[in-house]
Image 1 (spheres, rainbow over the protein chains, first blue to last red):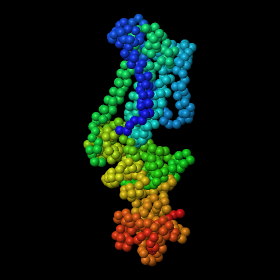
Image 2 (cartoon, rainbow over the protein chains, first blue to last red; image 1 turned 180 degrees about the vertical axis):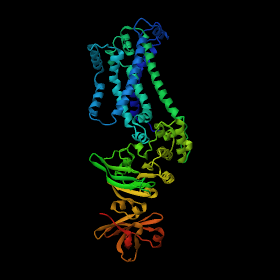
Image 3 (spheres, rainbow over the protein chains, first blue to last red; image 1 turned 60 degrees about the horizontal axis):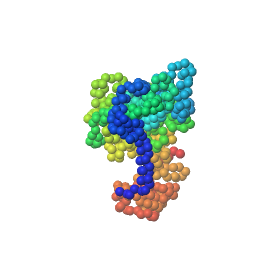
Image 4 (spheres, chains in turn green, purple; image 1 turned 90 degrees about the vertical axis):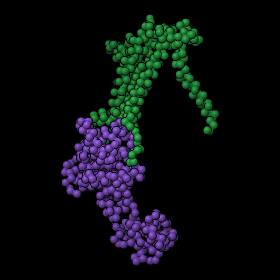
Length: 279
Length: 328
């Protein structure tokens, strides 16, 4: 093997530092969550225990962690479904150039560049000014969509860019109506990408903070609840909670990957010995 | 070759903005024949095919099939079926479901449509591949499935867009004869778009040579090759020399040119520029007055019986009947 150049080791070391910076804090919190009953928020560890996890499940005095978790879960699913449906429809609409499509596209993308806290403030103000209830499932839901929809639409642009139009022509040639073409050809082919959009929509919502801050109303979502806890909870329960939510995110991603894997292997299971035949 | 079931193109025109892709072509295509639309890329052959298929709107003119004006009908109601260049097999459906797709769209029950699809798979020798996915098939196999999927709609005309271009040379020859066999046994019309002269000559009952959105010449392969009507056709088909004589241009087949080291009757003087040995034939490049770049194709036995060499002065001649005057 060729000897590596010095820059390889330099850049490699830099990259390792970056990875440490990226995941070090999360791992530290994971370790500290197993702090002994007498331990505090920082090192050193005073023994190892599951004490803080126990306390987490014992509905303690501060906050409403489980309520916040279920609100975040429901909101995440609402945002996920809406993002997938609207992004697909938007992606389909933008496949053809229409009058005003370029300004409309910029209008949609601008939402990503406006500071989140301003979006949050604006939506919160509009709701309270017009006498509507500021609630995580209404104003909070809307505020999160301003974040997930542009992302979802951008992903669909990439998906449809790679989509071969002759599939649709073939379907039309074989007598499929536009609706049948969408149902039997387009959606099944882009299906795996939709899993990506769904996952994106869910995770963006699940850990969204700034846009939800002033739009969630009286009941907190999980990120807001955790933020609240950082100011008044001074025990490693906070770390136990952080570790649990991180694990939950991993589980969600794992589930989506599993779905993608299963749907793929179900196709492949139909038998493969290509090349056996002559022509 | 009845005219009743023929396909007729009348003043068929396709414009993309200011660009004219197909320029008012008129053509009759008899039923039950194999027709090749031949020409270089951008000549309008694919646009013509796609207009016949209904995948491209017609700017003006008409398409009439078996006495019915199908110009504005949707693709599936025209009596045509198209096989796409990349086959466009649905990647998520098994082979049998790909073939049965059009029946599913019509709402035919699963068992019945699969039974019909199986018949079509047998027709293309793919009966044992029904459960595969397209990605698990070779190019030639995919093409057979695409054929079966198009033919299950019982079209009067099968439209093939460069069907052989995605295959390697060996498979291409094999599928070529298969297409011809299938056309003959089904008795329907095939219209096949290609840029390969060999392919068109080997397959077609009728070749339509297109250039710049117009039809340059239509006829049997023999007519087109032996007596090209325009300089474009002569050059595109190959094997011809374009010779300017007395203010007119003539096409003379390279293998109809006689060469001798002694003066021939009505012979012209030329100098041998280069020799190319091709196995069964030998190409002799010549410099002649009025035709600085002409080629004589000589059989190898004739050549080696009396070889020529570069720089040699020779006499060149051809039969008057072999010189075809070209339209200006």
